[in-house]
Length: 210
Ligand code: SF4
Image (cartoon, rainbow, N blue to C red; front, side, top):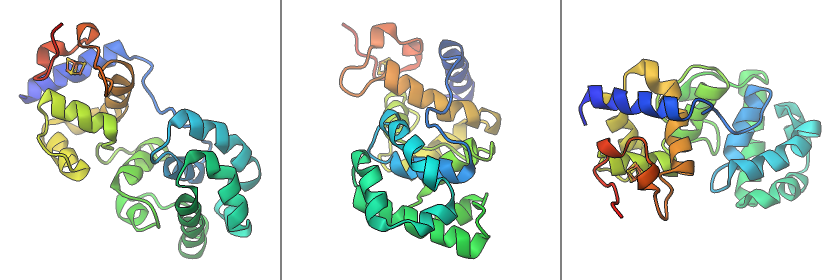
């Protein structure tokens, strides 16, 4: 797709989803980081049901370090993969305390060195917690829509991101991060995309005609 068409698609989606923003609840960069870690293979809605209870007592890296692993596992159990997530959250809190004096680092490189934090999560933290988007977080929705629109033929999220960054100007990173997720949740859904309602169907290589 040509750059001017990509910009047009972004503008159409922006008009269609004026309210598109982050759907994870958080108050601090550390809480954002924990929420993102919990959201892997889990809906934001479910994460938001768990985090108020977790953050009320354990909303800081210091507090997470002080709690028993088994207690953390119990609280985050409904998010799935709770053993691995609990282990990574504890380890990340410990690194933040020891190496960053309790403050979440604000670069992609440093974030990606934290246990259990990959490029997608680092992108989300930079965007939402520091208001400094560095790229596009490619989740299942961004991946599906990028493939359908012909923006990328890749299946690996990092390669898809590189393809997206080649055609999306930096000033649109903030919007694109939210718009792809919202479009994937509302119209271009995985099982049966609602192509007849899709505002960008004229730009789509995989529009399904009924
Ligand atoms: S036309 Fe259909 S497949 Fe293409 S982006 Fe829209 S909903 Fe998705």
